[in-house]
Amino acid sequence: MTLRGVVMGVSGTGKTSVGLALARRLGVPYLDGDDLHPAGNVAKMAAGTPLTDADRWPWLDEVARTLSESAPVIVGCSALRRAYRDRLREAAGGPVTFFYLHGPRDVIAARMSGRKGHYMPPALLDSQIATLEPPGADEAVALDIMLPLDVIADTAIQAIQGDRT
Image (cartoon, rainbow, N blue to C red; front, side, top):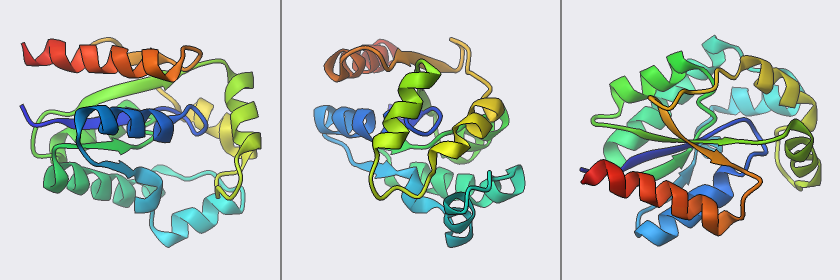
């Protein structure tokens, strides 16, 4: 099985940190979905305006293209709604494993407030939480952001290895 992994969750949950840790351990590339957003999306978020579904579709198509063309790969992508995850699965060129990062709102907000140089303002956290349709166990490996990074990565890798047996 060729790995197409998506580390998902609202902004500030640690998608980049977890994705990089997984990629390093697995010896595969990590790509940050934030880097795949069209310039208009980045400008909109930087201005504090939440994205709409119409804004997200072209971005999700680019993430799916990356999953298809770059596998094995880990991509960080919010993938907030089931319809977004379905679109990624349908266009990725093979199975996709989702890793769902979740945790307390106050912890996520504090992380966002402490970031430097990121275009996503903390003011958009509530719109992301409102958009989020948490995946069920049939859809993603749930990972608690309150655990140490090594434990999160170990849990994700165990889930991948379980899928391969």
